[in-house]
Image 1: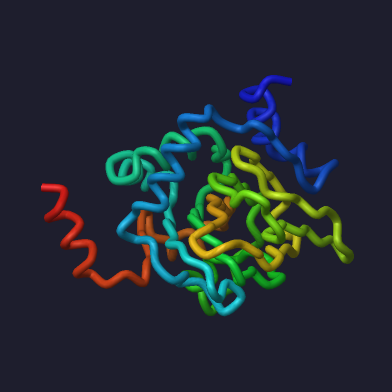
Image 2: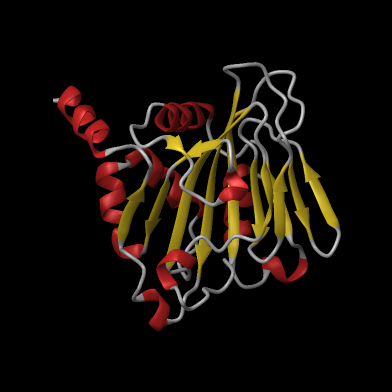
Length: 228
């Protein structure tokens, strides 16, 4: 099956995840698109110590929260991300959490189930994502660790990261990233996208577009000044 046909098949919903909890596409995107996305993440002024919870200790990243109405902002401000999102977003999902994630040597991601929109919907709990998509953009040579492990009551699959591998998995699956053993300066870089189908009452609490980062405002201001 060709790459575009495979991705299109995995986007179907409902149906696909009724009979399998995860799927892999490899290679997922043209090589030049992977390289452009990698540079976009690593050079972003938003990249900083992760603003997620303690399970992501030692990792770096930022998050982009949006609804379909916010795609125009993404197209203007993050055009490379918008091109990628066109490949993976399901039209019946209505809220999204995109997380560029950089895992360095000695760091890991503890077991968890994704509900990253919880901070917006509190005190209500959001449903699990319909699905989560992970795309690997950079993987250290001679990699040890850094694997994605999916659980369904027991370990379901151990996925070794590879550049240009895309993983689709059911949003209610518990998962983790094992500790990465890498030399200083080596990093595992991925894009994680949680896709939700929220009821109207919860959808009202989700911004149409918001970037969350721990980098101070002065850094963004300087980046804009440098660009102009």
